[in-house]
Length: 188
Image (tube, rainbow, N blue to C red; front, side):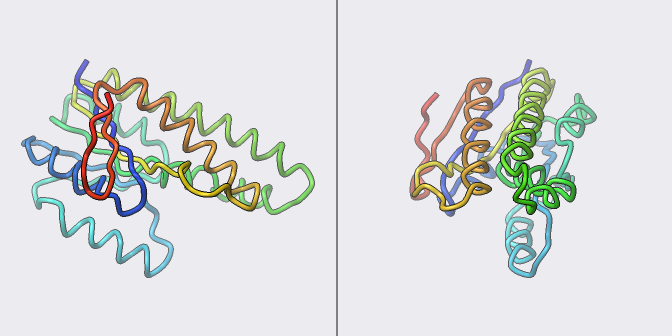
C-alpha cells in the first residue's frame, strides 16, 4: 500500500496549489480532474488549473467513476492526483436522473437520502481503491461545513454528503492537511 494524502480547505484557500507543489516531487503524475465544464466561468477555472500543471503530467477527465480510473491506473503512475471530491459529489448529486427527481416536491427527501447513500458508497469504494493502490494518492476536497446553514434542502444535503465524504477520506489517509489562507496545517 502506498501513501494517501488528503488536502482539505475552503474556497481559494490554496489547497490545489499546495497539492500541486507536493505532486511536483513525482516523475509520473496522473491528474484526475472531476470538473464538468458547463459554462464559461467554469471553463476559465479549468484553464487556470491546466496552466499551472507541468506539461508532463497526464490528465484524465473523469466526472464519474473515479474509483475505476484509479484501479485502471494501478502500477501505471507514481502519483494519482484527484482534484476535487466536492465537484465529484456535485456531479453525482446532480446527474440527470437525480435532477428530475429532486425538482419534484413529492418524495424529494426520499430521493435525496437515496442519492446520499449511493454517493457515500461511491466515496467508500474510492477510499478503498486509493488505499489499495500501488501508486501514491493525493486527494483534494473542499471544506463546506464552516459557513452558514444553507437555506434549502438540496444545499444542506450536499453539505452533509461532503462532510461525511471528507471524514471517510481523512480516516483512510496517512496524512491530512487543512489549508487556511494559503498556509498548510498538518492535522494528521
